[in-house]
Amino acid sequence: MRSSPILEVRDLSKRFGGVHALEKVSLDLYGGEVLALAGDNGAGKSTLIKTISGVHKPDEGIISYDGKPVTFENPQQARDHGIETIYQDLALADNLDVGANVFLGREVMKRILGLPAVDRKRMRAEAADTLKVLDIRINRLDLPLRSLSGGQRQAVAIGRAIHWKAKVLIMDEPTAALGVPEQRKVKALVRSLKQSGVGVIFISHNLVDIFEVCDRIIVLRRGIIAGERSISNTNPDEIVRLMVGG
Amino acid sequence: MDTLPVTEVDTDRISWLTWLAAARAWLFLGILFVAFEVWAQLVYRTTFLFNPFNVQSIAVFAVAPLLLALGQTLVIISGGIDLSVGFTMGFAAVVFAHCVNGTLDALGVFGSLLVGIIVALVASIVPGLINGLLIARLKVPPFIGTLGMYGVARGIAFLLAGGTTVPVRNSILAGLGNGSLFGFPIIVLVTIIIVAVMHFVLLQSRYGQHVYAIGGSRQASLRAGINVERNTIVLYVLSAVCAAIGGILYTARFSAGAAQAGEPLLLDSIAAVVIGGASLFGGSGTIIGTVIGALIIAVIQYGLVFVNVEPFWQFVAVGVVIVISVLVDQSQKRLGGGKVDEE
Image (cartoon, rainbow over all chains, first blue to last red; front, side, top):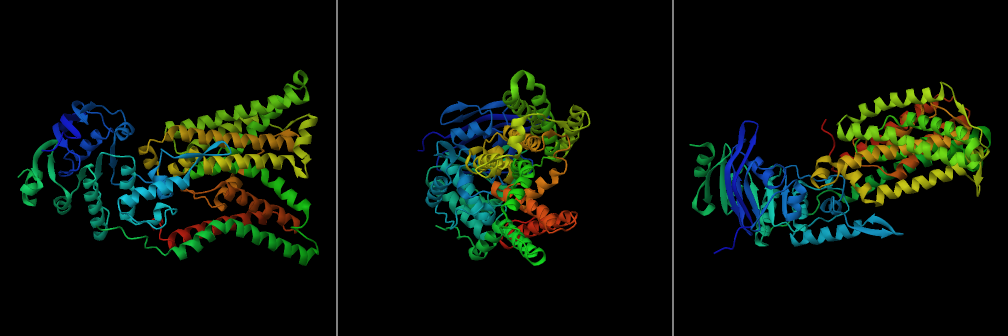
């Protein structure tokens, strides 16, 4: 049997005013597993991942990471623990190169005449190493990201998370803005992350994608867990029924 | 396993376009020099470029707008704008003049100068800090916040000056403002030092890297844990301090502080930044570009006077250069496969 989960969420509740965005939601995530989070708009997917990644503070419930209860005051603390989130808009600086983006906010410094200076060469080289591990090829690392394709930009965002040794990677609609060939590549990346032992939470509207890459699926409906299934024991029809509450 | 395709864009085409866009300011400057040289040779049988006096005058001409443009460069790269620099310069010039005069008897020629410089620089932090707090903390759009400060600094500068210029009687100051060291005007040397410092800060420091990141994507910067608020406040303080240095050098050059010292220079400073390759949408720009931009404006202004054209043509010429420069930038982004604003 598998070891203990890397991320445990117990009875998490979150209210905004009188609205129950999440009501006693629990989930486990294991290393090397891809967990899908599905649900209609407003089901609470986004509140759930924002609570896990430190954007929101839960009103009730416990989040445990690596067996220990944790509270995150801000996303930076979650990231320092190894919980990285890739938002739909990727949060990349399009005017900077790959190295600068991977190291954004955590730049590698060197000294020029005794003064601290950003070490672009080293950041580029280390970013290239990370991308190589993920089998991503980008031939010009010195170009600003705006000259890269959507899939490559997604790859850079993934590369950044991996570079910082993320053990939990939350991906919000990673295939939404991509063409079909690039969607395929991103899904391949998710599989290779899984092989390297990262726990992935995969949020998607696209059931085809979910069935292709995920191991388990949790369906949220109006802030509660409508069902949890192993991908091998379910089918898209059942998931849709859970989502809409049929 | 699938691999992502290598970049599909035609890198050859990009590289010469990027090169052209990057070099456009240099090209403009070169073309201007050649044009004025030819004009001077044909019409007046004299040289424009190979006259050291001309070169020196252009450099002195460029000092004040360039100092305003240096801080402005960082502000614009971050996606903001600082409309208050002109009157912050005037405010600092007046404060400086009063301080030097007021402390002359007590501290002597040299001491009063030193105190004046310190007080003027510290005083300029106030408008910069207020700009920064308004924009970063209270989320006032930079255009509005600094427009407010434009009015406030203008009013206070004129009030402090009593509505006139404030003459300074200080023998060292006049020497600094008009003297030379190794054949270079001292105010030009001071400006070169400040250019070097700002260039290093922008290009090499972590702070400068974050300025680019904030201009590229504020959201990405926030999520990456960059202290966007503090970074932004520092930007406007830096801009105000650069303007104050401009005010001090102005006072040195003319032996008088004037509230309106920087009034005509605000648009020149923004023009220098844009001609130098920065985008008003933020995310790009360099100090070297801005220096070239400021020189282009100075060459146009000085050159037109030199070849005896009505001075009003300089406005036309600077305007045309700004528009051409932005057009080159746009076409480079379009052809380079990058993101261009939706039509």
